[in-house]
Length: 445
Image 1 (tube, rainbow, N blue to C red):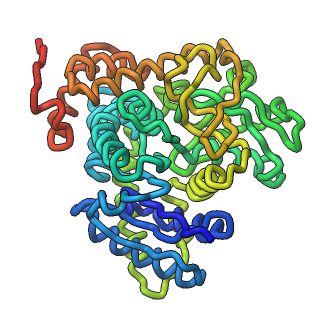
Image 2: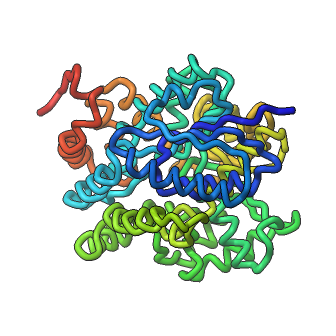
């Protein structure tokens, strides 16, 4: 008789936690969780207690013997855990709002995981995730680290490169969102759809798409020329592709490609939104206030449908499907962030990629695709360079490396502007960037 699994969720006060709990409830027959530990920091304590109490009500309603523990003691939560999930945000939504607003002053896109915002989220996040990895080595050396924290590609890259934790998988809800969107577009059940994904997190392409094993790529690409079908995630409003471009590209895009292929239009839209309803972070802050009011209701014992507006649709499907497949050695195919190991020829073997994998008890086994098509290869390589240099800056606390990472990102218009943005954002996020301010040797003009 199994003693049941212990899962530790770091960032347990996240508004997404009910999604995760719903997934655990749905798959309990395959994934016998005995203990779920929700961990947060002092600043997130109130939210963790609200979410934790909702989680307890959801589990009680389902009649399952899962013990939910709420704690600020990360080490207690990690002790003997089987799986560790990470979904934290250093600096909370206030930091994200700065990531989005400051670059706009320089005529540069501010976005959570792309360009300046992605870099600074990585600089704040990577030291924390590496600290968690050190604790895991000591307290749960056999556990799997399942990271949802953005920027997931850069974070997974940093764990693979700068920690001793090799049992790490990065996960994003964008690929499953694309699968669901295309299933809806074709009016077929999601289970009949398979997409060959390859690339990087938020820079992933669908090389082919199948219904019942038969390629329907041409039909899907034709449908994607309709502006109404250009985005499959709630937090990115599609503008629509030029039909000639999308047909010639010959592969499926993800919504985040709009920041690179439609930079000017997305920048104009973001500037207009910032002047009106606010940046995405500011919109999410309002949404979260409403969500946590709902979560407080002692009669609420389900995940409220309003959570889908938050941009995390299918998050629990992706997360719990992955954990279940590792635990049961299911050997199904899922797109995740893992070490390339030669699967994509033009990306270093020891780098993180987002790719369709066979999920086994020993982790994801990437499905080799050879090389990426020429039209998308260069952009993917450029973003991989950005992730590598960004992760290096986060670990070393080297100012010059941070400027280099910002400059080589495709959304950055020049080294001068990149440096100006770095300087202002460093100051704005000083509290959460100790590695740059403790021992700083800065070369400034």
